[in-house]
Image: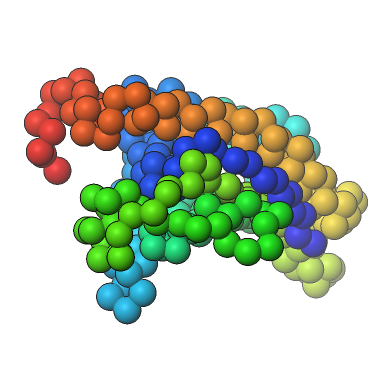
Length: 259
């Protein structure tokens, strides 16, 4: 079973600024105080498709992760490893088409996938989800010239984003099958004990409970994520990109031109 949760949101900022804020949102807690749980961000690959002009990027984020307390209580410590903060990795892929004015992103957890797999997909666009036809889009003169477009037109003041979370738990599916197959085993091994525990509860019931718990926390997560984006966007709007990056580099004791 896969449980999904979809929401729509609008930022009162033009598309180029929103895409920049997306890539900067984990840059530093000084820029985004809601990103303090992100321990590091590394770019795995980045390239522009010469045929389409689209930017393709893959990044990996290491975050402090705390399993929901309801999940920790629901499962034995042999599965959760106990409570408390742990490190986990999130793989993020993105495609940006600056000419057409859209960006698609996908983030998925690489840890605890046996307990719960979470996939977040986002579609940023200058077009509202309820619009039948795309809104006119172009870049400011400087951006347009650098991309080889035909020149500036009015820039849409808003950027719309549709976010879909997909939750899937497969906890106990294999161990339940294994426990059923090992009916002649008289040794009280951990896999067998866990398999019997899963059998008593019912794997599907446990999986459904875990998916529901995670889905119910989605709204809180989205609020924090959007608050973080809002702060980054306002700082970019008020101070400009170069000034924001220079200030962050200064606080870190680096030259603005250092990589």
